[in-house]
Image (cartoon, rainbow, N blue to C red; front, side):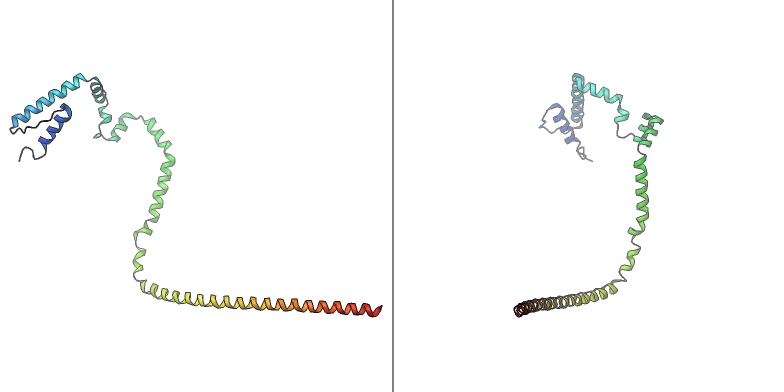
Length: 193
């Protein structure tokens, strides 16, 4: 196994660059030089830590709350340690509507489980020939419907034409009869005088 198999040398150079603003151009090959570099790096980090008050304050505050800020700790263990039973009860009661809605949704999912399970879809393959036959019949029925619709439209147009013609004839006869009545009335008036 080589010493830099896991990128140790690269990581060390990166830390030196970030923390110490050093660019190390030389490649040191023996393990003692790596140990010396790590010791130098540790001393410089310690100096930075001691001389920088904001970092020191942060570390102090972090250590005081490390059990809360540590992501490796279980959140359930934190809740047991931090929350009192009254607070837990209040949280559960405030979330009661959400919990009831969630329970209803879970029940709906369980009810619909049979629908999406695919048990009813097994017959689809066996119904394919029947569907093909019915599609052919449907296509024939659609053609027949289109022809009947066209015939009915033509019939209605002819009917409307006949009704219009008869209406015009009736109006014409009405005019003829009205003029004849007027003529007869005028003759009767003249003969009476």
